[in-house]
Image (cartoon, rainbow, N blue to C red):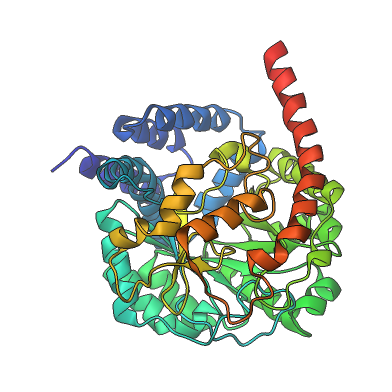
Length: 446
């Protein structure tokens, strides 16, 4: 028995008895098994906000431990905090040294390209129809755990189309978290019953605004279906959040207090914010936010974190916390439903197919190596992306690696988008550099 086993047992015991009373004790136990210095620092930060019972983060934590189903709470605390973070990250770093390749914190897989909706601007809308076999997904999960990867993200298409297979994956890999990006319209009582039973599945429900804005993009009636699904999950103690893509036309609404508070009232614990990227279905650079709108998103995501009982992340504007781009296996990679192993859900190029290679071999493919040697793509981490912030980097990566474009249309190929994205990057670069330099000046003065 290693030191982690009795600590895990003690944490579960605290959750069963009186988790609110024992929050500090659980944090102290986490400190005992933290290997990396930054993990110990993060735990100390958590302990400080647990001392402030008026803070939004304390209220957020207490709400979760009171309202999330006990089996889900226990399973996810161990799988996410212990396995995926305290235990998994040191193991990932060991493998990174052995392989001389990026080893991710999470694997994103698409079980299927099938979907019951036809949303405007879908990033996955121009793949050919495919499905990953259960056997392939099962193997990827096993190989991921060997590398210390315990966080499996499932997207699509609509992943709940394959819910029976996903439940089997969750049963086979009980130490891992399965995080589903879903449109939410197929979530029903039977699905919730199974999710509560296995305990290691969470949902991020896609939504593009309040009723009119959302249905304009996702289809008439989808907002009401999503609200019904959220009510069902909240009433059953299922952990879920929302995923919102901001565009030139909906950005003010999905960052508004009204929208965010509605999501919190519905039971959301976290939020993923993504800026629109011109890939997939009918790519349109004009649908992207302006540089001033992206600055607004940056300001609002920090406002939400400072004031709301919600864990909110902006996939692009939080590059300053992740050291730049997290794709290319640095923190995650993407396996589409055909099996193509891509650096990112929005970077549709690949050299290898997971049906033909192991996960380790995929991490050492030419495009992953080309990614790795260039990271970070910009010293200003508010300009992290090789597609929309530094398009010359992606152009060089694709040319050097000779990776194939995995969509069935060339409309979003970097060779065709480059001139437009170069202008987008230049405009955002001026704004981002002002923010970055201002923050650097404040730090220097402090």
